[in-house]
Image (cartoon, rainbow, N blue to C red; front, side, top):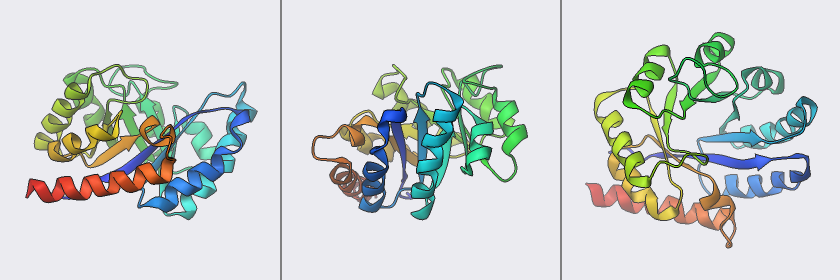
Length: 215
């Protein structure tokens, strides 16, 4: 069993989140992070672009891929590595369709798909050319057991990498055993009272222990 890589999802950031850069840098220095998804909740396009422009270099300087949520044009304009589209297996989803994002970013950029409520939606996204699928997410109400079940189903049958979202650190071992290629975390890291870096060091240890126990 290969060790899953870590995928960080930021809180929804606004112009008042200027101090988040330091928080993100500390998190990225705590352990190896493969990917960071930037989520914004700004008043206008200018604010969104500024937030992303401030954070993309921090992520890329640590060797992680930096993705933008729901807007492939913003990803292009800010030098991000790609985009994550919610509802990627449906005809339309998120801020644009998966097909639109693929047309803009492929083959050089990364296009991920989430918000996949059914197995058919997941298979459609994989067949369309998504670079990875995410099961669960910060805005999803899918129970942890459902996320684990779908990760296990996908990992057993398909080659497209899958991301399993863990709402709590305690959910990480289940996703490791299910075969997730990436484990995504958001509030479990950034709302941890001990600090994100401490939470991530614990996650790295949990993943290593879970992998060893699976052998």
